[in-house]
Image 1 (cartoon, rainbow, N blue to C red):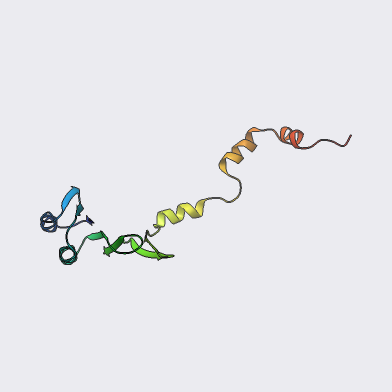
Image 2: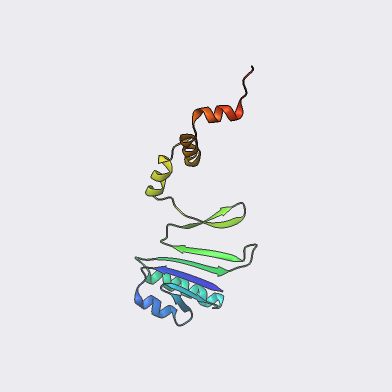
Length: 130
């Protein structure tokens, strides 16, 4: 089994791929070609997809039974303790959002503290020594 995802690919490449694969959504192709045909498809994809991106996932021997091929894509396969995962880069907008988060109590706790009077929390938890 093979899945090929294309971004900004020329129409000629998409037409070539429909000879062996089914296009189930825009730029997403699936099929079950032989290993030889799969390698030819990948070579053709890299040749024609100069300004675009491509990710191919196909079945392979191993624990995961998957292999990832990536061409001009930000996401990259990364080995994590013997398991291959796709590493997604953190955008600058995401990193700014993370750095803006304040430390300390959660928003729910701050709201709870703001609504409850100070004397109520003291009366619940402490008894006087008299």
